[in-house]
Image 1: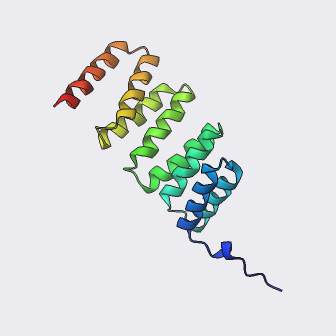
Image 2: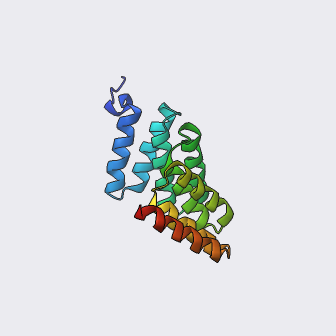
Length: 146
């Protein structure tokens, strides 16, 4: 007898939504399985890769999270959220130069991304480039005042 299981027919977008619901309920394992279902059904689903990256980052699996975000970026090269999150995770791993490159890429795509500017400053500070950090902060403040 063959069972007709409705979740077998879910679209990648529905799997993503189901995963988001599990994540809101702090059901991490279930959320991850849903995101995996989404990307297995549609490997070019950048948003599902990004959500997987976020979830893996929350779970402290930074290297796996970075790989998932890199998949999202391959699919959607202008995805500022994935660039910024990748930078944050690299920062957490003390890979400050790589993190800085991600924040710079985010800012190049969206100069108004406050979080990217903030983390860029922290990366510069961690690299001992204090003067450059201060100049960048003043430049951003001036840009915002216009």
